Image (tube, rainbow, N blue to C red; front, side, top):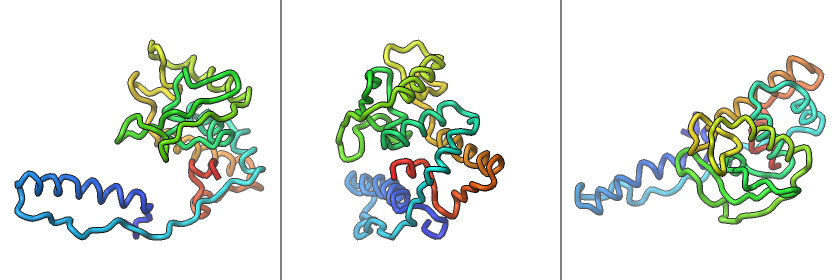
Length: 198
């Protein structure tokens, strides 16, 4: 998995997915021994995350994005430091007049849960970002009392994370086509959605 470039976190999630049912089967006496005894978590040094320069970030937000959800999620992350799952978990009730309530994280595997480190927080919300969130909310096709801002086809869950990353990647590709003097080499620099936090 490391040779394929997977992160330590992803490798540990795979390990957990494989080990949990085997441990359960042993505890239920379905198998005679626990084959995962002694397996430890992966611990390798991940490649350092890249950071967009100020001019690159400005160029990314100046091009036309294919997906408004991806644009708005990047805008939220860049201005508040919210993680991708925290952006996805945002609902109408989390938008204040000048603050944003980061109360949940969302992952397709676990659904809604507390943010990383179990810490809810309130972050400053710029007026332009608030307007972008409210505009996106108007496009939500679901008639929910407190809908997800980053809506999907299903009212009970937000859009999948891949849509957000794909939108950012396509925006960087568009920057490279439109502003060749900027040229964001996001692959070799390891720039991803989480780079907004850095």
